[in-house]
Length: 100
Image (cartoon, rainbow, N blue to C red; front, side):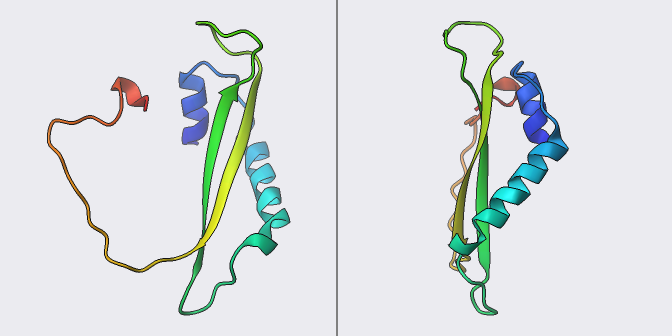
């Protein structure tokens, strides 16, 4: 799981990926009534963004020992309109090793 690899790379406490997956499944089951109804013409989609943050009481340059994982969900209808993409040469979005 890439989320676990990112947490490990940032020296955050590691977690059980199957337990996280079960928690996310349970969250989706609880909030399923908030999702728009899907039809043949307008399928629904769910965007979910996970975050792993430090909740240490002291800021500093050290490894986190208290952290929190949370999910932000956004249920939407699938939009089928044209997409314009702009490309640039010589521009890096991420710092080396994938830090955004």
